[in-house]
Structure formats: C-alpha cells, structure tokens
Amino acid sequence: MLEALGSLAAALWAALRPGTVLLGAIVFLLLTDLLNRRRPKNYPPGPPRLPFVGNFFQLDFEQGHLSLQRFVKKYGNLFSLEFGDLPSVVITGLPLIKEVLVYQDQNFVNRPISPIRERVFKKNGLIMSNGHIWKEQRRFSLTALRNFGLGRKSLEERIQEEVAYLIQAIGEEKGQPFNPHFKINNAVSNIICSITFGERFDYQDDQFQELLRLLDEVTYLETTVWCQLYNVFPRIMNFLPGPHQMLFSNWRKLKMFVARVIENHKRDWNPAEARDFIDAYLQETEKHKGNAASSFHEENLIYNTLDLFFAGTETTSTTLRWGLLYMALYPEIQEKVQAEIDKVLDESQQPSMATRESMPYTNAVIHEVQRMGNILPLNVPREVTVDTVLAGYHLPKGTMVTTNLTALHRDPAEWATPDTFNPEHFLENGQFKKRESFLPFSIGKRMCLGEQLARAELFIFFTSLLQKFTFRPPENEKLSLKFRVSLTLAPVSHRLCAVPRG
Image (cartoon, one colour):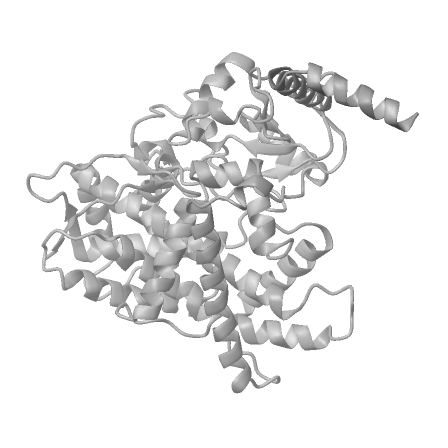
C-alpha cells in the first residue's frame, strides 16, 4: 500500500512541470496576501496597493512628505497607505489633528515600534516607548530637566556662554566662505551635553566630532530606501549588505560612547549629589533596585541619554541652519532683524528670553523659519491603541497614524503666502501673533519634551549671531532652498560668509 502511494506521488510529481509548480506557488502566495490584507469595513480610502510591499514604491523617498500631498487632493484629509504588512493612515487639517492628538489622545497615545527601532532601542527610551515605560521615563526626565535648569535663568546663562564660543569659532573664518553645519551642531549639542553629561566639549575634540558625525549619519540613513525596506522585510534584509548595516553599526558606536560616559560617572559618583541627568538617573535606579516592574535600569539610561542627545541636537541645529540660510537669501529681512536688535540691545548686552517680548519682528522671523524649514514634516508617528472611529472611518488597533504638518504649515486657508518666506504671518499691527495652525513641537501629552529648551536656544543663538554678523552668500555661488532628506529635513550643506558687524 505504501509503495503504491509512493509510486503515485512520484508519478504526479513527474507529471508536473517546474513552471507549473512555480506558478501555483505564486498564485497561492498572492491569494494568501490578498486574504490577509483585506481592508476592514468602513476603512479610510487610499491608493491601490501592490502585493507584499503595499504602497511602498508609490512614494518618492527624496520628497516623501510632498508626494503624500497628491493623495490628500485625491482621497481627502484622512486616507490609508500600507507599507508591507503595516497599515497606516495620514491625517491632514487642524481639526482632525487636534482630534487625534488632544481630544481622543488616549486612543492614539502609543508610538509604532518599527523593526529598526526595535533592533536598536528595543521598547525603551523616551521618544518611542509606550505604556508604563513611557510614563515612568517621561515623568522622571521632565523633573530632572527642570532640576538642571529647564525654564530657569541658569540655563539661559549656559546658552549665552556657548554662544560666545560659537561667535569666536565663526569669527575665526574672517568673513571667508565656510560651512556652518558642524559649528552649529557643536554649539547646540553642548547645551544638552551640559545637562546630560555635566560637561561641554571643545569644538576641536576629535571624539566629540566623531559623535556628531555618527549622529548626522544615522539621521540621514534611517530615511534611505534600504532602511525603509528593512522595516518592511526585516528578516530578509538582515542577511543583505547595505546602508542599513552601517546604520546599526553607527548606533552601536553611539551606545558605546554613552556607556563609557556612564562608567566614568560611576567612578566618582556621589549618591547624595546629582551633577547632571546621568547622576540623577543613577540615583533613581538605586531607589528601584529589586523592583522587577521598574523601567529604571542602566540599559534604559543609555537609551534615554541617546534620545535626549539626538532630540536636543538635530532639530534645533537644523532650524538654525535654515535660519542663517534664509537670512542670506533675504538680506532685507536680515537688516530689519538687526535694526530691531540694535534698537533693543547695546553692543555689550547679550540677548535673553527677557528681551524677546521687545523683539516681535525677530520672534516672527524665527517662527517663520520653523514654518518654512518644516523639519518634522510628518511629525513623530502614533499608533491606534484600540479600535477607534475617526471622522466616520474605522481604524483598527495597531494602525500607524501620521499627522501631516507639511499641509498644515502650507495651508493657503491659514497662511497669506504659504510658499513664501514671510514673517508677517506672525505679526499683527507690529506685534507678535501666535498661530493655532503652527505646530512644530506637536500638541498633546506626547508633544516635544524639550520645547522650552528649543525655544530658548533658537532665540538666543539666532539673535546673538545676527547681533555680531551679517550672513551673505559667497561671491559667484548660488544658494538654493534644496534640502537633504533625513528624519529632519536639513538644508543641503551650503557655504556662507559671516561678515562681522560694526
């Protein structure tokens, strides 16, 4: 009997051609994919998707935030996309954004954990953690940042001190063309370093320069096609060479740097006195020793420090670079800012947050830099925590939610000249005017942790630099508003001339 069945199987196999078997396998996989990914009833509309990859190749990765806008025109303010097996929706317009981030925030409070993020950070840290871990870490971090100067005069003094180093470094260029990228990165990063590490780094420090280079590189690499493919096909991409492998290598080096700093802290750590964020975290870890439910442990300290270092460096320094570029491109606006600075401050006075109220035009210019620079064009994503109805559509648990800040900050119904750099957007009768549709720091419970710090840095750095220098394009070089695609939209590296004033 067994022999007969074996012979029958062999005969059937011989009768089937390899092409037939392959075709059958493909049809089977396509049907499986189709059945697994049927859209739920009353799901938001969206473009047709390809098997296995979804809408992955329908986006322009060089201008992903802009390519989404054509779908807004076709499908409306709430539409769906799929990336591999990850369902996603894009939210456009202030009413829907507020519904998601404020009014129904508990249904959208989580962050989606991408395969890259899970491999690098697991489920820890400040930015992408969820639930109990996020609540514990955010509460502690807010308290610690306040204890080390957030919102206080002492932090302003730290920024003013760093400004002096930056002015000296730029002055050494003697008005010749230079790339301000890493000088600004150095200065901004030193503020968060003074809070987290308890020290600033010299601009010539090779180790610090390498750290900033790695940070810059991971910011760029995470948005490359290869790294996005890793998020769709992690098991396959694990075995392939490419930029995603360099990304993981760079993150390992960054973690090793922070781990070494923590070890150095431990050698002369005084549990009774916290010098900086790391010391305070070590104290908190001691308090929770033996508590298995606690998220306070050394590994999470590394992740939190990296999150603070990343968020406290990249976004603010990128905004400042946009600011200097816009001043070089719009000299008449730069002259108005400098006239206001000269009217409010004498040569010996340093800008401070107390002087901001007397500088409405300068404040408006900084806000317009943020609007036009658009460095977080799609905000940090959220995830639906329970099946939810939004604008009449059904969003299943686990759906990724992206809030379209690009459309909000370029909405012709909200802004008189949405595609033109125009500080008048933030002025009314010569006074600074807040705008509800301006959300560079997001809104709600998971809005930017360091908003206060970023606002202080942007005002003091920007105003101090324009107090001392006039920024111009180099002769015979054309500046453009092209950007480099990364987690934050950074301007393409430009050389500028910083001509000392007076």
